[in-house]
Length: 101
Image (cartoon, rainbow, N blue to C red; front, top):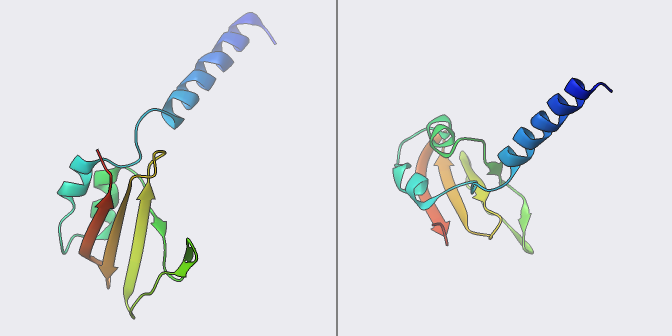
């Protein structure tokens, strides 16, 4: 590997690593912007990336209950603070957070 190729590789690796760490996945300010009747796409645009669908998943030993047409999405930071969004037929009906800063 030539010297300039090695420097380019290191620069790209640094950019990738800096993008992976540091910033929380979701903040309290972003949580406050998410309003009832928004779509999931609206919420994801505010947060900056997709959440995890919890529909029917086992979370800490409990199955996440959902109603027909309801979906629950989850974002979690490294410190375990998190955001939950409940949607009914594609629109936000409820939001909750734990420990967001």
